[in-house]
Every structure is written in C-alpha cells, then in structure tokens.
Amino acid sequence: MNRPVFFISDSTGITAETLGSSLLTQFEHMEFEHHVVPYVDTVEKAQLAVEKINRAADNSRLQPIIFDTLVNQDIRDVIATSDGLIIDVLGTFLNKLEMALGEKPSSTVGRLKNADRDAKYKHRIDAVNFALDNDDGARINRYDKAELILIGVSRSGKTPTCLYIAMQNGIFVANYPLTEDDLEDLRLPKALAPHRERLFGLTIEAERLAAIRSERRPDSRYASLRQCEDEVRQAEALFMRFGIPYLDTTHASVEEIATRILVDTGLRGQRR
Amino acid sequence: MNRPVFFISDSTGITAETLGSSLLTQFEHMEFEHHVVPYVDTVEKAQLAVEKINRAADNSRLQPIIFDTLVNQDIRDVIATSDGLIIDVLGTFLNKLEMALGEKPSSTVGRLKNADRDAKYKHRIDAVNFALDNDDGARINRYDKAELILIGVSRSGKTPTCLYIAMQNGIFVANYPLTEDDLEDLRLPKALAPHRERLFGLTIEAERLAAIRSERRPDSRYASLRQCEDEVRQAEALFMRFGIPYLDTTHASVEEIATRILVDTGLRGQRR
Image (cartoon, rainbow over all chains, first blue to last red; front, side, top):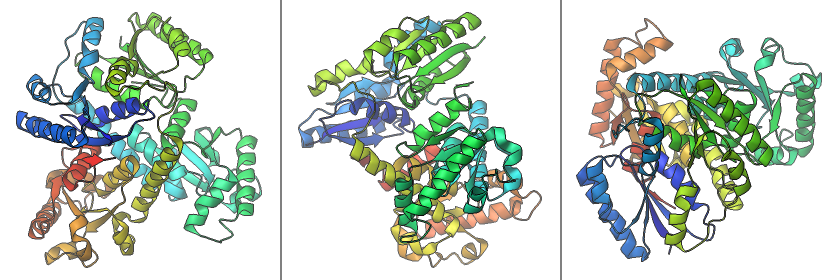
C-alpha cells in the first residue's frame, strides 16, 4: 500500500503541496498517494477532511501524513482530531519569524495585500498575453516592449519557457525562431538587431531535437538528425559570434531553464 | 529600509520562495526585499552567497532572513556563518518525517527519481503544446483527446487557465470560445456536444469583462458593457440549461481558478 498524504489549505494548497512534495522525495524508497484538499475555510469542511483522512488511514493501514497551511485555530483544532501526523507548514516557522521581526503574524487567510496583489496579478496575465502575441516571431514590431527575447531553432524550448516566465514572474518575454535562412549567413536577423542586449539563446542536443521534431513531423527533413545537427551548430555559432548568452535545454525542466535565464540576465536574482 | 530576505537553494529555489513568501505575507506591516539565490551547489557558491547576505545586512542595518532548502551539510555550514537568520525549510521537518516513516532521508539534491521525472515532465510539456494547439477552438477535431474543455465568452480567462493547468498539472485542456452565434439560440455548439461531460464553464462580471476587452479594442461594440452583459447572461443560461459546472473568474487568480476546477472535476483532488 502507498502511504496517504494530504495537503490541506484554506486557499489553493500550492504552498503545502510544493513543500510537502519536496520533503517526500527525500524518502526514495517509499510510495505515496497524494490528496489535495484546498479551500478548507470552515469547521464543516475541516470535518469532511478529517473523515477523508481517517478513511484513507483505515484503507491503507498506514498513518497519513498531513501537510497543512491552515491559519485559523478553530479549523486547525478539528484537523488535529484526525488519525494523521500533522506537519504545520506555516505555524512551525511563524514563532521564529515573529521573534526576529518583532511583529505578530496576521493569521488571516490570503497572501498579499489586495491592491498589491491585483496589480501584480494583472501584470502576470498581461505578460502571458504578451508571450502568446509575440510567440514564434509573430509580431516582430512589439519586441521593443519585451524585457527578454528568447531565440533558438524550432522546438528548442522557447515557447514553454516564455509562458512559464510570463506566468510565474510577470516578465514580458517574446521569442523568435531561428530559421534556415537566418542561420545560413550567420547574421543576426534584422528584427532582432536593435534588441541585441535583451537576447538570450536556447540550444539543445541534436539527437534530442530530432526526437522531439519527429513526434510532430515523422520522417521529414525537418526532423532528420542531419538537419538538426546543422541547425544547432549554426545557432550556437551565431550566439557565440554576437556574444549572446545561451544555455542547453536538453536535460533541464522549464523551471530550471527559467531560473537560469532570469539569474543570468539579472531579471530575477534580485527583486522587490 | 526594507528587510532583505534570501531564498537559497541547490536547485531552482521555487520551494524556498513559495513557502517563504507565504510566511512573510503574514507580516502585513513589513516591507521586504527579495533575493533569490538558486543553484548554490558548491562551497564556493555558498561563500559568494554569504558575502551577498552580509552586504545586504550592512546596507539595510537589518538582519536578513534566509529561507533555504539546502541539503548538503558542508554548504549549510558555510551559510550558517552569515549574519542572517536561517529558516531551514526542509531540515526542520525531516526529523519528524524520518521518525514517522522509519526511513532515513536521502539528502541528495534533486527531487524525483529520474525516469519518473522525465516521463512526468514530458507529459507536462505535451500538455502545454496541446493547450496551445487547441486554444480558442483552433482544432476542434482533437477535443476527443482533451481531459477537460473550458468554455466561455471571449476574455473570460480560458487561455491563461488552460496554460496554467497544462504546465502545472500535465492535464490536457482545450478551450472553446462561445461566440454570439453559439449563444443566440442557447444550443451547445456542435463541436462540443459529444464532449458534454468534460466541459467546464468560465464566467465573469460584465463590468470587468468590458474593462478587459476595452484594453484590446477600445470603444468597440465587442468591448461595450451592453454587449458584455448580453454575452455573459447568455453564456450562464447555456451552462445552466446543459448542467455544465461553471465558476466566476472575476475575483480569482489563475491558481485559484485552476484549483477550483480541478477539485470540482476530480482531476486534482486525488492523485498519485
């Protein structure tokens, strides 16, 4: 049996799930069954959650682990009656922070001040729309509004990276696909030339690129190893010639690619 | 002065930043300056981080707060020499989990077993590509592959929600925009009829919708309050007539919308 794990929150449960999952992956020989229980914001919902936890305990005959970010004490008290082991994700650290900061935590549901949150949120959604509008070289005349322009050959990972950065960091990112025409004469495409200092290159191993392209267009010249090798070699030559920073996406997740780009470019390493 | 806060990790820093930010928003009257320091995976990089922390302490004359998810003890020892207050995000809970689970944590960098991670990751990127290919009713013939189809009027929040769900949860989500033609006769569009049980509706307050549309096309009929009111009323009538679950996105973030949809549909509440 897999051990049941519950992520319980009065909000989305993302914080509890992010931390809890990181912790559990440290236990390599165990298997877990995840249950996300968000929006537990009343005593009644907490009682339903307790029933779920106890049922999972009975079924698995293993004590469930509960990661919770609940702040309301009445709700916490209900969860405490369950058969699970509670890991109090926020409370554990709040005392220490209270002492260091000399202020009592607010113990209210919700994260950011409203106006602040709304402005930041609008910016993130605007960034997602910008990424979509400026995907794949679609509207080259808006590159002046981009904080960052990812360039690379087709299927090197530009689009998912752009969307992730826009969604998570609210940064305006465009992307431009380097085509054979661009690559042949080793010149920077005209549309990109004025924005050289905001360019960041993505590259990828030719074998991996061929595999990805083959899923889209099997047995095509586009997906052939030979073609992929040529394009990748030329793209890297272009990056080096123009001093464009670049990274290899072959073995990296979109989170890792985004983190490296934002730190390298200084767009994330430090912010308010 | 704002108090400096550091998120230090041997990986992307996402776990440290997610938890740390949640904690700090409990201190409403304080202002913080965030510094993300990812990929601290050598003693040398740890020493650079310590210099950064101590410089921030000197400049602000406030003790920095450090949230870290470092697992290597040598690296932790270096960070411990800094002037900051350390919140050990993972270590704090590992002992408790070790006792409950009866297994020692692995203390290695990295999260998921490799093969597992690669398969899950590929699925997420496939889901992002699926969302892009099936955005805005683009290729209605692939709805049979969709686990979920979001429907709603133009600018009700379908696209960002689809992309977020695909990216974070690896779920195949398509979306279909309800047009005036669809809405007029209160019938389910033909393309959607065979997939009724996978439909989920998004609605939005007409005033907010008019504001969002006005940014795109100012002073248009499309953005007029009258038009928005008509479309929203008809869309909600359609949802109710066909028993399609729906939610109001007006005051919700994309994380909140996604969480509610996935719990309501059972796509996230419980999973392995």
